[in-house]
Image (cartoon, rainbow over all chains, first blue to last red):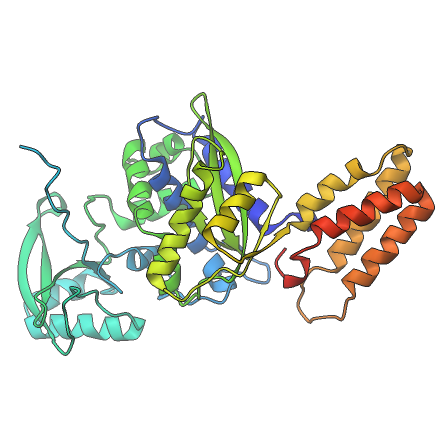
Length: 85
Length: 331
């Protein structure tokens, strides 16, 4: 039932694919929390549609946020810089 | 030599877009123009620099010192200093990644492939880097709080959220990923090794602490969950007075269990009707007047007629328990 699939489920499915392709997550002494949070940043800031209503927009823009530039990777660099407030 | 007492230096790196490498090298010889270019970029973004806590403001920036990145062929990296609080900021040009020798183009393509579902190993083969380097790059991004990054994008802290946990595996161990979303945006993504009533509040608490740190007056007013006890208790503990509801989708999955002693096709037909009803009630572009409560009452009447009065009563009671929060607009 695709229409009732919530946005939360979509996020979980996307992460599940990422974790599955890592073949049982990763090293047990690795920093799982940081890795997951990094994937979450990608989920929020990478544009996810090419042709639909929100073409070329990332999740943040779709939800009404502003991103510094049109380049998602530059946005990622800028937004994860520690020197900005 | 103990390291426990060692203070960690605050990350005051700023990434500046110089459009290309050539303007950066030209500006290196002109200190005034370098600082002006940097200020212009900051003004264009609308961001402010993060000074020390004691800074009273009113200062200006000056070039402080520089060092050479040996692994990038001796590329000079400049630092600038706030004249009031003496905080020093490292200015990274856009074509350099912090603490990494990887080219941004390579990192960009590899991250996109990872995000698209390609394994770290395959990404590493495609883009000629080591899987561990890519893993560390993602971890480096993950050291920044989601709340901080999202508020920098002008997003207000969400008053209504969806909270749920996903189970996954870390080698042979079952692990949980507690998640908080609002719309398409992930506000929290945690990691716990158990889904107990003690572990989940700890994970969700990270979001709460980050939100309060960012905006002390912020408050979560409503949360939809799947009805899992630990999640519900976590929300109640962390956000006192929060209005809790059950996500429609999860509620719908439970509907067939409330209908007993009827034929499967009848049960299926009733479930489909309820599904259609909730689908029509979802928020969409161009608001429509939709009396959800009235339609739900009619639906229970229909269940009572079709599947018997006992089932009608069960479904009515079930709807009463689940429907809290369905009117707040979150799905």
